[in-house]
Length: 164
Image (cartoon, rainbow, N blue to C red; front, side):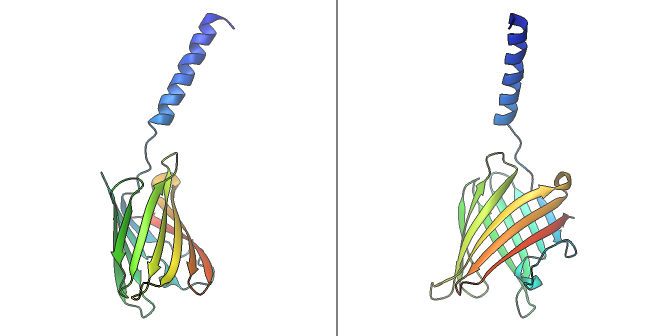
């Protein structure tokens, strides 16, 4: 291989490496409304996923989830993760606790929130694993949600949200 070809190849490898190392983190910030016609509920009630989500990003990521409980009352959950692999704890409307952790994927194009919820006595009530990603150039938020309840019941939902 001649010197100029090696030089060009070296430049291409350097540029690709820099682009990989400094890849932009996906921007989930904004207000998101559920797209019920696209969401795959898999025979689970609609109230099992938020109907609206607000995300704020900066040095931390804050997520506000607006849901309906099984009695059709609106409930809001707030979570704030201090960094790209942080944890947080929140109180549920039932009085139980939710502990959650966030972990960005290696490409910074999405993240996983793994959480456990307990009842008032501290007994495990459910485990949830949500994979967050963006589609349509950042206009669609996709949540792949897998839930395992304490009674062994498992369900999955693929929820789509439109950016407002």
